[in-house]
Structure formats: C-alpha cells, structure tokens
Image 1 (cartoon, chains in turn purple, yellow):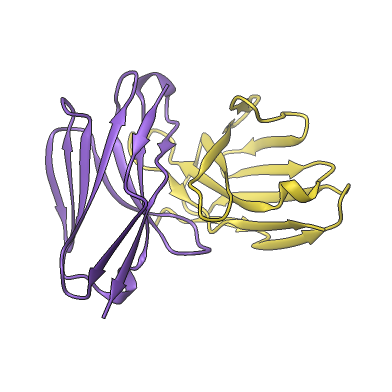
Image 2 (cartoon, helix red, strand yellow):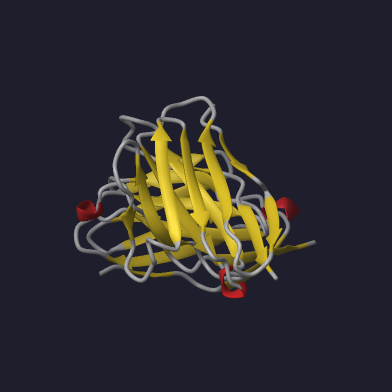
Length: 111
Length: 116
C-alpha cells in the first residue's frame, strides 16, 4: 500500500517563507504532485516532480528525493491569499494514473 | 486550457432519491477521469477510475451499485449516487487526465451534495 505523511497545520507570517514536507512510502514510484486547495474549492495543480531535484515556478518550488521518499513544497514571499491546504499526492508505478493523496497541510498566513 | 467543469455545483436531495453529477473536460479529451470524495477537513479519497468506453474501476470499499459511473464520451463522465442517504453528504470532485498525457490531472470545481 501507500503511506503519505505531511504536517497537519503550519502558520507563517506574510512575506516569510514556509516549507511543507511530505514523506511517502509506495510500491514503485511514478511521480509526486503538489496541489493547492482553498476551502470549499477543488484542488489546483502546483507542481509535478518525477526526477530528483528542485523545480522552481515563481514563488513556489518543489523538491524531490526518491531515495529518501521525501519531497517539500517551498512557498516564498508569502501572501495572505496563500492561506490554503496543500496536498501532496503520489502516483505509484503500479497504479496507472491513480493518485494517492496525503492528508493535506493547512497553511495559515498571518499579517 | 485544461478546464474541467462539474454540474451541478451544489445539490440538496431527499433521502432515498438519486442524484447525477456531470464532469466535463471542456478543451481536451480525457480517456480517463477520476471521482473523489472529500469530507470536511479531510483529504481527497479516490472512489473510482472512469474509463471511456469501458466499466469503471472502483476502489476497495466503494459500492459500485450505489455509485454508478458512466463515461460515454471522451469529454463526459457522470456519477450517479443512487438511493442517497445523509451519510453520502460530501464534496464530490472529479478530475480528468488529458489523453496521452503523462503528467497532472485537472480537477473540476466540485459538487457539494447534501442529503436531508
């Protein structure tokens, strides 16, 4: 089976940096995704990592280490609108295109 | 691009009735669509994988006779909740993977179902 762990909640100040960690254990690996979800809305795609290393996209960056089963999402220059849940999802190799989601990390940005 | 719509966005129904939710990929074709359910403050739980032209694949613990899925075209999948009960009240979200794509799925805006 799959096991995906991420912190439940994090609080940060506007303008600061927050790093959301995600660890996973899967039978085979075929990519890791990060999604942002505001309350009552559907998730929106943020990033996709399949190879080790850092992928940067504006204020958001995502890192992957396959050997450690570890990823993080880095949010820089935090804005109030970044208050949301951030979901880590893994696509196991044997599961085709199915995604398994972690429990999500609720990030609260304070002024 | 890559827009997915769902209809209705919210629905209230009486216990024992059936509700149909539509998921459409508006600007791409999707051989595969996924249906998720999300309870308050919880993460997404995959219910089933919908494949165009074939039977859906259900996750363990999901009753296929209660949650009927039809994927009749490359842009439309429907989920019908039959004989709905209050415990079926939830946020139902679909996603679609563009045909031939290796990457991300695109999510619809979700449908909030309340069964009274």
